[in-house]
Length: 417
Image (cartoon, rainbow, N blue to C red; front, side, top):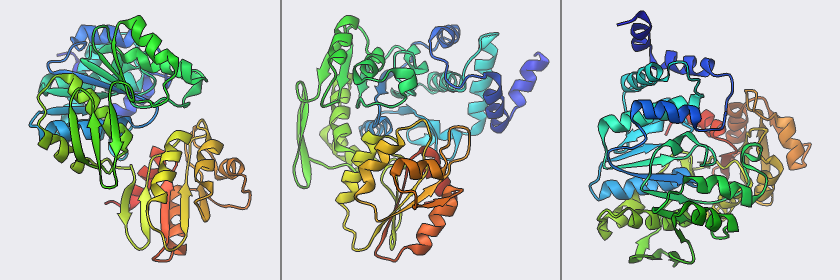
């Protein structure tokens, strides 16, 4: 064994992650040429089980959580690849809901490092190839791949999928994906495959979804046309290839549940209705409308663009609040801060604006500008803003923490559930 190989096999996960951050200077370098070549060398473009690829501006994580919950309730072994993580890198790869030991991630990184030779890979590409290697090794019945950014040029798109779904299309990452919904839809629809089911859960689809699906030769199924959900007070009905009535409402967005059922029925695996009921009722996802405590009620949510902030606002309106609503916010400066904050402005009684560290982090002053409230309270760190909000809150108040995965991660690190 070469000394290089020995060194790569003795690295800890912390060592590997710091190495991956150093080897490629560009955070996001679009294109599948490099990552596709390494995937082919490693035999990772086809996985042993069924593959469902999940793209979309918002709702990818929730959709993967619900799909995994339903499939596991039906007795299938399920692998999920998601990003970003909240507290630990190992959250990104799950088998039957559980994380893998750090040593397995290190072994996967060593395999990618050996196979890539002189080919440069981004952090995300490296991580994606490592995840695919782990899935090939464990061979679950179904793999759910959450797209990182866009779809067409995302590293997850090197895999041949059996079904691909798009949850929603809104403007985010405009520098990379275009500044119109039509342009964004073309990028997302790049996950569709010729002759394979292509699910669209976007209720107001840009015309480019259908035109791209047709160009690719995919079998498009659109919400409101080929499948739909009907909400009742305490339950809901699904109508698609199958009909399921009086289903339990999930704690995660119902619109994503509708799209998930369309994708799962298109996979062609037997799904007992009991598994759908159990899976929907049990699906949870950290950082999505997650309650950390009562009196005062504390809710954390990773909403970080206007579309997800609007959904957060709609959810908060449904939660009775006798007192005030206090909001702790930290955001990245490349997000639509003004648009996101405007969605909640009328609901919030008091703002606690926090600076996020790192080159992409927005300062509290920038957030105050975006909010149009120069006098709003400003803090140097999310933890500081959060502690002040908790100190100010009475038991009947509600504290909402949102704006970024980083913001929620900071709170979960100091107040583990």
